[in-house]
Image 1: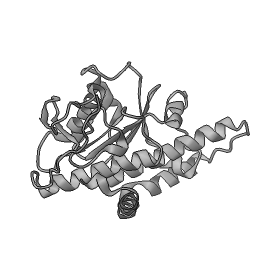
Image 2 (image 1 turned 180 degrees about the horizontal axis):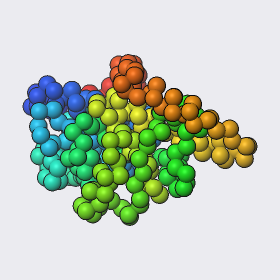
Image 3 (image 1 turned 120 degrees about the vertical axis):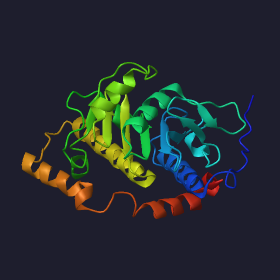
Image 4 (image 1 turned 60 degrees about the vertical axis):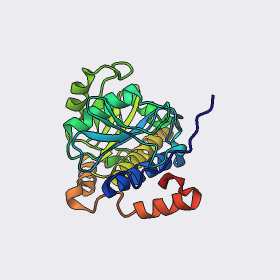
Amino acid sequence: MPYDLAIPSLKDRVSAEEWQTRVDLAAAYRLVALYGMSDMIANHISARVPGEEGAFLINPYGMFYEEITASSLVKIDLEGNILFKPDFEYGVNRAGFVIHSAIHAARHDVACVIHTHTAAGMAVSCMKGGLLPMTQTAMRFADVAYHKYEGVAVELDERARLVADLGQSNSMVLYNHGLLAMGPSIPEAFNNIHRMELACLSQVMAMGSGAELLMPERPVIDKTWNNYRPQTRRPFGLLEWPGLLRKLDRIDPSYRD
């Protein structure tokens, strides 16, 4: 039985701050799909609700990323209680709740969390060496964190180990699983996952070529990573975000609904 995706707008039923977060988060879903990083209905992107402690927005489990709109996002709390969802049968993915609630509870500096299962990200997640600083883009993630695979992330006790492994990093390789990226805003989190994906893809392509690989010297890696740190430059993603929204508006502006 098909679901009716004609979801009434919430624009006049939530605060202006929450509505803007909903629009930006819906845009992030559309952009992840547009750039080939989605996995049908799997994976999840979440964002804190401004002014509501412990509340965050996440995708309804069953909608494709290219279908997500500002009004279709589900609001839940850190215990998994649904605070608001549209009048449809979609719920929230259990693993999405476990992973995202863990990070939102522990990292108050993080506003948005993105999890992907891309082919390149999954390939790197199976490599003992992890994400290698072999390209300039990859050197940005020299402080990437790692978390051992424990099975599908549906057990609440995994949350403590996940956040312990994450520390203060904004990027993580989930071994034998995929990638996690986050940031203090939705644009910054999207930029992190986009560049992390490019780093993984270039690594897989280079290693798969069979050619002898050229690795930069450690002092150069450290210097490059330091240049990428937020204390030394403008935040990643903010400059590009208006252009990305214009791109989406040209393709399909319904994410704003």
